[in-house]
Image (cartoon, rainbow, N blue to C red; front, side, top):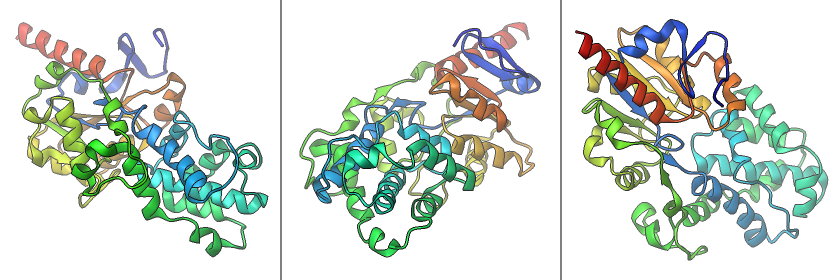
Length: 338
């Protein structure tokens, strides 16, 4: 990653690129908004694995379809994130299931080995969904396009059950009741959330106190448990946690408008890791408000950088710590020089 050159961006520190004409704003950031997944916590072994395991369980144990192939790896879930509109991992899982249900109808096979190997790939499918605008509605449309037995296919698509299985994998016997209000029926093991790892340094976030907020695709209860486990609940007030079960969702710019008003923001930065996060900031910029927000994408893979550059991202980084450390350093230099 070091040494990568992106036209129009300055590498202001190792693994940190800032759009050249936004650098003055970058130096004056006074507020931060953070996504949780991929920014505060590494969820590769939790949510991403839950998506894969839920899909497999649904086809093998609920529908009883034969075959041994893994229908989607946790790495491949990123294809849906990059397609946009899949900030909610339950909806992402619904999309995978309807993709394979539609593919089964097209191939006239229930065998998982055949479904995985033959016909349209996950990459092709997500590319088509992305072209339409991303999200579950278009995933369903693409998955069922040209098929005659749509109602019969959709009868096998039990989203409530898929959601429950996902919740049981994620929360497990130790967290399911607190998070979702029920005890597991299918998956009686410890929850995958126990495998989440903290990515962000609290000391770097504290420098912005009290102008710290959260926008997340998690439910409020999931968000509060995540922040509790990351040791951040004491520096982020409840009113500054906007979750997926609230009135508005990404990429609605009202999220940033609400938080900027609460924080008294002049120049803020929003750290996320998906196209939905970037679009949230881009939509806010269209409001033509006096407050300014810069978009920062934490890259999962350097190969994804061009996608975000094409959509006008202000800052690219390998880690949120890299970004916050440089902002804090610039602030100290300004204070020492004044």
